[in-house]
Image (cartoon, rainbow, N blue to C red; front, side):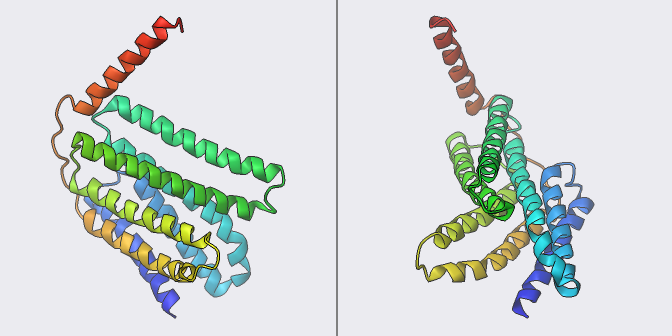
Length: 245
């Protein structure tokens, strides 16, 4: 009963975030984020209906939909990097390339292991991809935090709420994964039970932060982060020219 209540609350909150995003005009600002919310909402509704009325289909449908959700959630990281660094195009381009390269390497590594028989089936491969991407997202969010503090990047309330909610969700997932892979850990079961509740908390943060569209703060015409990037790029070109590359 408790699980069903949390499930229904999560579906309701995701629907509210999606509806308010359309009403507030945030779809155009954060299209990848709202695509993720839409995919999660659709997956949850389908899963709930299957669980209630066609339980035989619940298992076979779970992992394909889980893979779709994993891919969509990684798109949120792309959205966060794109929006946070939109006034620093040089760094933004490098950041997006890093994100896409990390995603491709993670998926490619899991696919290679699957083809070589390291996994008994695709289910384990999908779980492995999900785990590795969570670790990568955690590291990238820490990198973003360092950039925000180091270069005093200004964030509007909408984007800040999106980042806080997603950082909270990824952080809980990373802790949960760490506990799961520790042998004889009594906190592992508790962490798994708390995971749906933390996702409801994340949706609540997004619902409040994105309830209305708010203007972004005015950024300086040239930030220190872009100057540092240009200086590093110039030094790199100089070194390559000296060695004849």
